Image 1 (cartoon, rainbow, N blue to C red):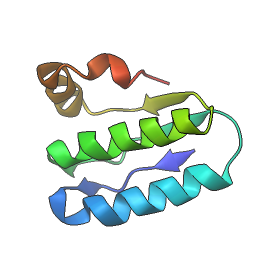
Image 2: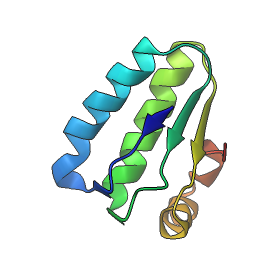
Image 3: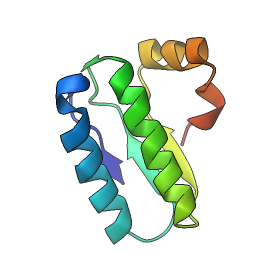
Length: 88
């Protein structure tokens, strides 16, 4: 399982994405991202999750998110990408 940090804004997005991609490449099976610790975020968090999803699918794996904060789920709905971030 991959774990998001408590803060994921534009300032942390590149480093967080790099860490997550490295983690998903080293683990086997379905990719699950745990977002329960996420407290401070902006739309960059969605971009990071969507890129993790893309990378997961390119490796032939499924992708899901556990504990997506409601505000981030609402933002995903507003942007029309909520269905791309299924709950684990």
